[in-house]
Amino acid sequence: MNSDADQWLRTRNDKKTKNFNEPRLCIRKFFPEKKCFIFDRPAPRKYLIHLEQLQEEDLNPEFREQVADFCFYILSHSKAKTLSGGIIVNGPRLESLVLTYVNSISSGDLPCMESAVLALAEIENLAAVQKAIAHYDQQMGQKLKLPTETLQELLDLHRATEKEAIEVFMKNSFKDVDQVFQKKLEDKLEAKRDDFCKQNMKASSDYCMALIQDIFHPLYEDVKQGKFSKPGGYYLFIKKMNELKNKYHQVPRKGVQTGETLSKYLDSKDGVADALLQTDHLLTEKEREIEVKRIKSEAAEAAKKMLEEMQKKNEQMMRAKEASYQERLKQLTKKMEKERAQLIADQERVLALKLEVPIAAGPTKMDPIYLVENRKNQLSVNPKALKILDQISQPLVVVAIAGLYRTGKSYLMNRLAGQNHGFRLGSTVRSETKGIWMWCVPHPSKENHTLVLLDTEGLGNVEKEDSKNDLWIFALAVLLSSTFIYNSMNSINDQALQQLQYPFRN
Image 1 (spheres, rainbow, N blue to C red):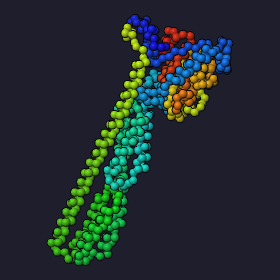
Image 2: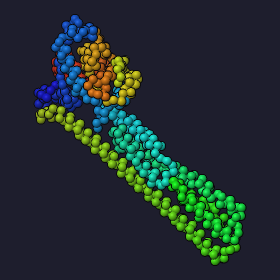
Image 3: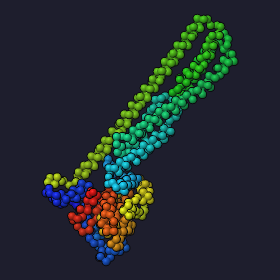
Image 4: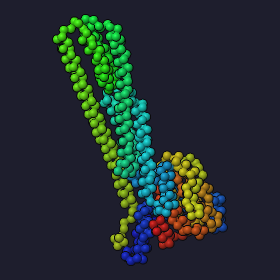
């Protein structure tokens, strides 16, 4: 079909005209880019049953040229399969689509692309969350050394690593409706940040307490030995205490619990200083009162400082949360703008290719393997085929073919693979292919792409007990492919066009 296809539309509004136009409008809507190829008979009729064994020189030269043109066009024009939003389909994604579509058909539902994409999105987005968390854990494990000197040092590292984790999520996620999975990621990252803060506090407390014991323990041993139980002993004790405090504060990287741990320790030893103060006979009563006031003033100042430190930490946490929120919003906005631009580009491409409606009309080398088996009116997916798809990380160019049985579909697909053999060719009027067979080969002209060829069971086989089988196979071929080939005998007449409506009728 070409850009003059509007000539096939009628302009009346009666039922007959509507029925005539319907398949043509469906083609234009669902297949905006179209190309028609005509093939002559490949060889004399008596040789057709041995088509697979014929040498190239035994084939009709016109037919060979037509097949070459067909293969060149398909391979050069076929694009990687993409989902809405520009999501490129690789092996695991095609695997998910196959399972979703077949499960829908098996349960009696119509296969729906949007439902399949949402199901795929849930799998991909959950995996994206896991990848993001794994990246965060790895980076924090490598870069974080506890305890950190300040809380801000930890928060800055968390923020930088969180940004990377969100980038990993954004890169691997799609169709995260209402940002459900991004919120799950945010909750997990926030919980991990809080856990690191707790670990940081504990690491600091443990280190500080060990340091305090090492520095101050000899002093209190001297108190027990009575070295300060003499006139002037109290001031000697205070002098030594201040020296040890300075020594403690000079040790680097004690962490966020430096002051609080020391204050708690000294508070637990208050009775020692009080006892020395009361028993030092060199001190007058007035001096004792002054010293008591000084001790209380220092305690109040220490409590005030601790409160200010706690308030400062809370403010840092609030600023960190706000910064994280703004970063997530920034990345989400960037991703949405990218997806919107991709969607607009997709729509413009489709609109550019669509015909204008008349006003009156309103992997590694492998052999073919069955992907979807059709037995006894039941569809089943081959686990071995899914395993093959699961290992293909490259973008997939998926070319599917459908049409009447015994019309040379398998031969054309073999030629696309650059082979004479592969998909089995029937040698009788019976259909050879059952269900959908898959052949994954390196794309001959697109580097780092895999060409997936889907050969389908012939339509209209009289051996089928249920004509709905044709609908299933046809729908799967259309939904799974990035390029769809419809093979028809003789000319593209009204009967052939009517058959294209199978997926759209109840």
